[in-house]
Image (cartoon, rainbow, N blue to C red; front, top):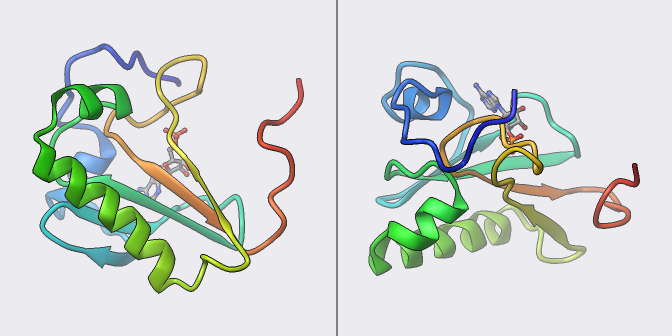
Length: 126
Ligand code: AMP
């Protein structure tokens, strides 16, 4: 079910549980600001999720409320994950769903990294 991106942070969400080590994940990268792991239901040959360590519901929450150090650390981590996976050439796509219309399902900010095939048009047609 898509979530309301303006709701308060729910610390029982699945990515909060992954950050606390209560649920396993296939970690790709971890540092002070971010954790990256393989998506459980990959939509491309490479499908990695990068999440901030802090408790932010969405990109909207994060961009409005996170301190500069966390924003810089997270964005650098997203770039580093893609670079270290060798995705810069031939290319990759970033996606962050925010709220109902975008079909955000997990209420902890996550950036999807897709790569490994031609990714087609930016949005699916209705
Ligand atoms: P979104 O629709 O942008 O909220 O995407 C949520 C993503 O989280 C989907 O691509 C799911 O396949 C993925 N996902 C859900 N649970 C897990 C999990 N336990 N480990 C890895 N990925 C997950």
